[in-house]
Image 1: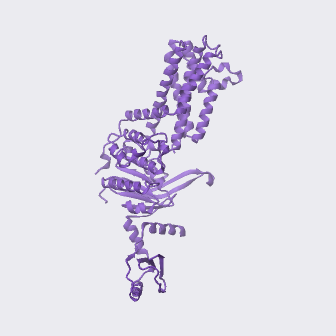
Image 2 (image 1 turned 180 degrees about the vertical axis):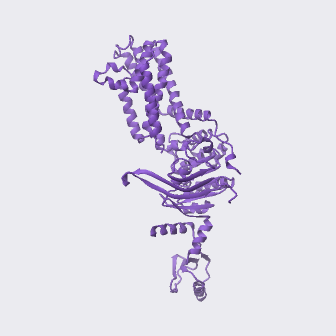
Image 3 (image 1 turned 30 degrees about the vertical axis):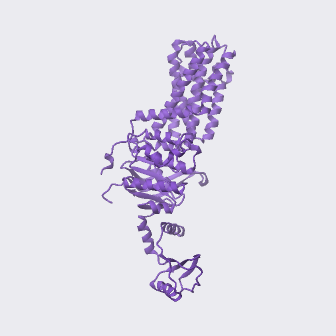
Length: 317
Length: 253
């Protein structure tokens, strides 16, 4: 990875917003120290709760906001200010869309595409995102998911090298979500650098090559999804086992530190497993009662577990 | 691979601005409320001022007295009120932000809006001129070139003032301020009739307004064939002050 030049490099980014009336019109520091890199051919995800600083980080990276501290290099250049050459290589999907309500989607998309020398194949994109199915309506009459699809199409109109997607799956129905996910995967395979924000853990886990967890304006963790979840598992002294068997089993009293329960009909869960002796206790009970589970799972940590652990650490700090 | 070596994918600045100008013009012309303000209201003003004796002291024939002020009103309708309201709501919906992430950038956006203002203004001027000629208007031919210059200077001054308001207050406030200003300027701002017809105590204030500078300069040009130096100075000063304030204070988000 180190031999590939990153498309985006952010170092110790700091940003104030305001003035905020609730703070006696003082400025609010929304970014303290965010650092990240995004590479071509990768989906880099900024994960964080609402208000963590993800969108502000993206706005600084896109050159829409001037940071108070730190540096941003987008394709080797400072993105702040008018720089048509740089902007022609970058596509941006804004969280609020930025779509003129009185326009129809397809003419708007064709207009934006006409600002580029070599735009993407607009007809193919329209078909792919099924924009014609609501093409006769003005943008103000579209659903949230339809507006998301238009905003995504606009971000891709110039066939950019770097694509910023702010909450790309918000408001999408499952079918549209799949279309958008497939498109993002294709863009990554085509060598684009994709930087997206989301607060949806499933999306992040499914799409990301590399994840930065942002909390209270700081980068608090980073790594691939596997690295983050494995690291959390190593740190963890106990993990749950779930299994499926005949419903309504009479549950024995487990040893100290373990907790056995039937979570739903025929679904069982043993919490607190931290040694081979605990597994031995479980299998001994199965042998004694002639139980053969139809499914057995030693659960791994999800990205959501990792994120929640970081959030809890921050709360306790 | 050196990413800096990749070719620029933007079309030329000229083509970008023209493309955006066409887009903005169509947006303006497809808006019913703006058409009422840009075309219907000036035509009503033309008929009322021509068919009454309100401007008897300004020129020998009422149509000759009315047309210069109506043309000045067209500038205020389009460059100030129409463009201000459009920009204010573009700002609210994030449209300015979206376009500034494209190769157009902020500069291209502003130029696009200027082209739209000029396009709509040309349509207004042609329409009012044709109607006025049918109604018997005889403009002073020596005043046509200065008149065009003053229309352009007025467009510059009022576009910058419209952008200043649209870029600093909420769109609802922009709507209220620019519509109210249109009514006040049309009714008592020295646009449709000279400030000299107003009470003496308010004349110094009216004379300092860009609306009066534009209205008077248009009347001097198209009625008498004179070039108004005072009009030139006032409109240039208002354009410079408005542009400076808009550049300094305009908030894109």
